[in-house]
Image (tube, rainbow, N blue to C red; front, side, top):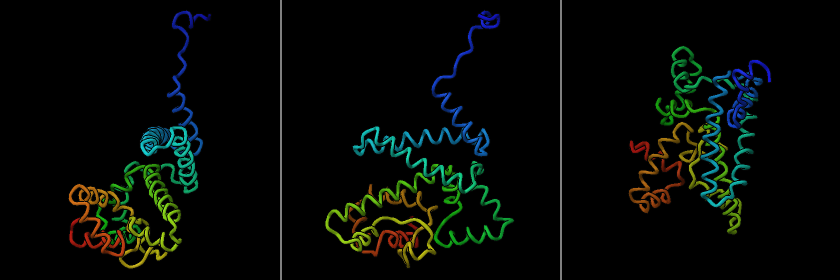
Length: 235
């Protein structure tokens, strides 16, 4: 044993969790991410994994399959994150956008289009202040739900057109200007509205879910129903 080891003892090796974080940070730093952002990303990914796996297990998915599902989805999200070249977005990007629009006419025009659809500054902060991983995981979960529902309708004997029509009872988020995502009152809703709409839906379901569902049935789709409720100031 060397002199220093004899006096101070052997250096402790990092525990498994610490080593995982160190490797994670080093990997992202090699992709151009700052150390602080890499550590933040590590913590957020852990939280997302816990929530995603717990949800799938509650739905009856075995733990190993739930973890595999998360890893596959996160791999896709990370690839997009790297390819889009945005590995160092400001932590409060929504607040940053609202400040930047004061000096950036193009950005202001883009945000004003969202405001014309009912988006508020608080909605912009809510969505864009989230980490990229959180936002993309939310979109991936939504898409997974839509695909699962579509396949279930087909298995019930519906035609693809009938199944697509049935999906109009699901809220659709995206670009309201893209006719491929819906037209008129059924056009896509800006994703920034998702939190407000979720809270509205929960409130209605706690109240009288039968009346709420009847209102949706009477409209051309959930998006149209939400737009009508927004005009009345209820969302």
